[in-house]
Length: 287
Image (cartoon, rainbow, N blue to C red; front, side, top):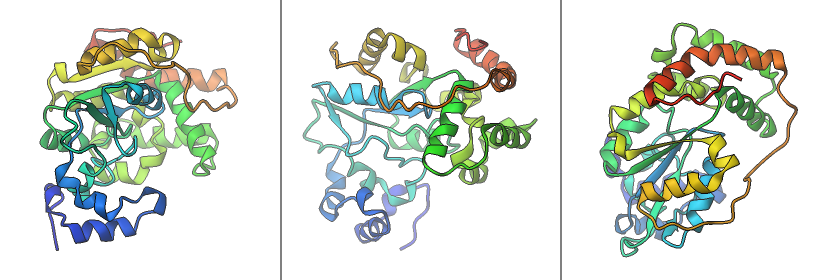
């Protein structure tokens, strides 16, 4: 059975089961859960990114809230990597419709940068609330690199990786951000691209009104989590409540060299200024 990628409803049950059989066992959705997909809800909120900016911590805090029902997994990646699996597959990750009194959502941090995610989400869940976490892009890039190195995906030095990427991006950022083929090819190694936040947010703002977007800074969540979390609860219409605040998935690695950090700050400086002007807030990422 053929279907058009723009219409995820067109994947039938037999196709879904076959697609699941091709996935690693730990990530599979069971046949009965797939069958129940149409009877399940769509998310009330999505944390769309950015990667290595605290999405794991924020989602962990939210799923402890007594009025939040967790998704089957935090990162579903439907609107980027799994869109072809169909909407019933996506629904299969969420609670049944009968649980309307509880809020549910997911957190897939690559949505923010994906060229098609904003339009796909707008078409599927137009009233969803979107949460964005940002971090000094130099620190984000370095953390992303070590994440890949720890997973065995990256064998270059950090300097080699970002120098090569900077060459690809030079004078071509807007085109690259809208190029699906580029994103798929360089998905794992977009250390610099993911930190060019203003251009990414601009695309989301074309599809969603400001009241549907909550933009937070990673440093606030890390250093003073309670007011940041309470702001998130207010945005989602949830009652004030406090989880156990702690650092999630913190891995140690050598500090970035001053020379490399200075070079990265110089690369990101014009993009950061664009972001500050867009949001009316200076994050002070020049140090």
